[in-house]
Image (cartoon, rainbow, N blue to C red; front, side, top):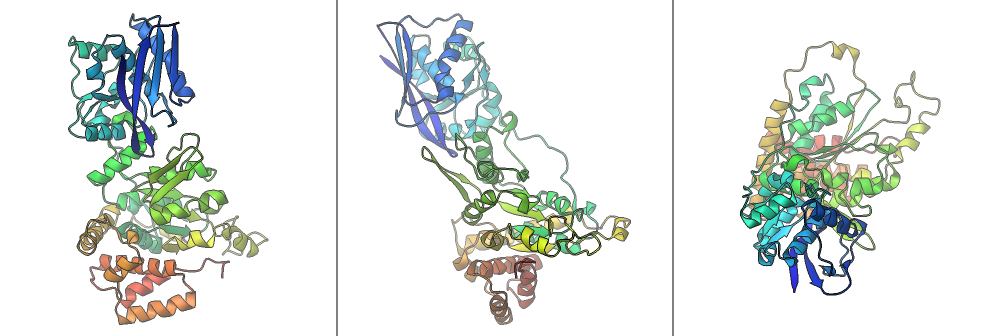
Length: 507
């Protein structure tokens, strides 16, 4: 007789159905695990054996064969411990095999029979709901699974508690969904003194979902400005929160099984590798660009990042997805982000100040900025210079307008965009101007005659690419939305062009 214990394997945030088949037959005592398991899965034999001993159970002295079907798919991770244990309990007659087969299970077993957290519980719960099955997961991750909806969830703290539940001696209550704890107020734009041009660019970036590059000397407030962008963005919608939380769940970064409520803000160090930024590694995990999905990816000291890592960002910035292709895996993660980057004008940071610049100026600026390729630079909508702060500005009182006032304008502009996209291209899921392609832009952002003439002339003089042309149009549409204008006018085109410039040293 063969018992079955359903579980899942992960391909990105998608779940693949895995059938854990357990057979106990006569023959020399053996415990064989087949079905292309990796080292973590292969070691589950000893964890299961020790957990059974802690419960006073002994494996029968027979030939035990466990097959992870389909056999040609690589199985990775410690979450296979629990389905293997449940399959064995069903084959040994400790639990009813038909009840075990009605649940998708995942969890890591401790040597004392406790259940430790694993990654991917939220996507597994959604898959179980679609398959009409229940879900068994570690107790600490029950709140995470509860967000999947109307699915039966068992979240025991140990294997013993699960056995007692099936035997009717202990009833496991359904876990309650939880949101992440409030982490306090976000940094306020009121803390930034001066830098009015950069603040305006930050508001435009927030309103339209545009990428932003800030160039300025050390200490001019570039990082300070970037840290205040999340406070200008609207909260995650329910669908966005679920998708973002699935990514963090697969990455094992969903603390306490709580759904995320704030847009992610990721700021990796410039020593980050290509897999760290776009995903990959031995198990094709999501990278920073996917962990920042629906939020902000901040790259400080942009030219100091590895050239290959920066070039790997080009495809996610254009398509909104990060695809990791390996010999044994082809995985795609959502990666619709706002890229905010900051850099000094040169390595010493004082290219424009003759009294502080190094002896290699201006050649050092051209060499430093050339580390950013033209195609990557072309994908950034807003380029803004952040000059050194005037010491006199630091003694001034805080500005009257802070993040709350700017966020209100951003929310109003985004609401207009969402309504427009739903009317023009319904069902496409577009919410911000930065997501619109050329064809949609012509429908929603066709400028008036004066604006069209200015854009055409500027495109020729600045030698804009087709991508650059459309990005100017996107920014102009956002500026019109902030002004409450149905038409993209000449002044909107002019301001959008002021943010689209050739980098110093690249002319």
